Image (cartoon, rainbow, N blue to C red; front, side, top):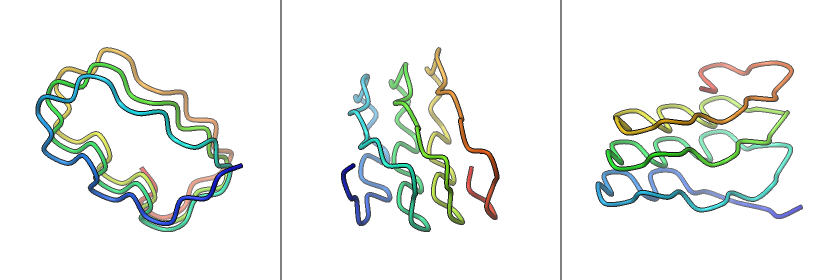
Length: 86
């Protein structure tokens, strides 16, 4: 299991990004870790897997906002939801 400290807004507004990188298969996420990561990536067609089952507040918030070309969304395996996690 890998550890990710902070990747918020990493690809935000990358309008030419068509394929998302594979995210670490982390089961527990820190607050705001992937917030807005792909926001406004208008060419992104497939979202990466989101395997976390233990979510923190805002961890995926607005992650795919403005991704108008998405044709496949990830499965969301979390058993409980934190404040504004998606």
